[in-house]
Amino acid sequence: MTTSYKARKAAPRQDAKAERIAKYGPMQLREYTAEWKDGQRHLAPASLSHLDSLLQHHIFPALGSRRMSSFDHKVADGFIRILERNGVGLAAQSNAYDKLKSILLGAHRLGLFDDNPLAGVKPPQYDPKRAVIPSPAQLQAVRVAGDDTLTLVVDLMSGCGLRNGEAAAVNLRNLVADNVYRVTEQVNQTTKTYDRLKHR
Image (cartoon, rainbow, N blue to C red; front, side, top):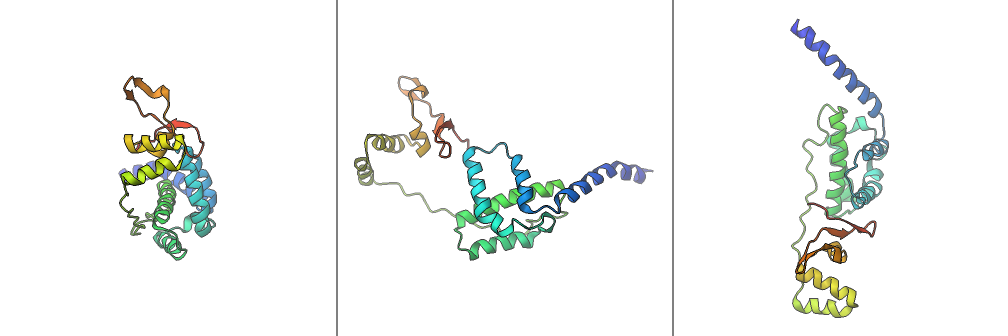
């Protein structure tokens, strides 16, 4: 009786999984990604722009026409080798792989794959070089190279530790006291408007 009960209880889940496999399995990656992207409502405009660039320049040319049901770890590993053969830099390789990983893990959660299609794949390792801090002489050269606006931005960045977008967004609204400025905004590089800070 217990076996029969468990089988009846599992049947709706199995039917739903079979329907998802029948719907999404034959889809090309390009089609599936369009639907997957609609669910990425948390992405800011700059992040969406970055995603679109990676899809159009790296992921779709290599895998866009591949059927979702045909993905496995060999395909994912082959994608990395294609990027290497095409001379794509390690940073772009890492970003493209991360996006493909997000798409495929979403499909895995839907039940399209019995096994994780990324299991055993060694992702590209991007190791950024140490940041170079400009010397006082270099900072002085930058200050005199531009107009008053550039000088102000350079002083805000070097003197207060602000990032590019934060320095460009400095305004009187964020003065919370005579001697206190609260950094709460940045200029969005995509929309060219003030936007809230990214929380990283």
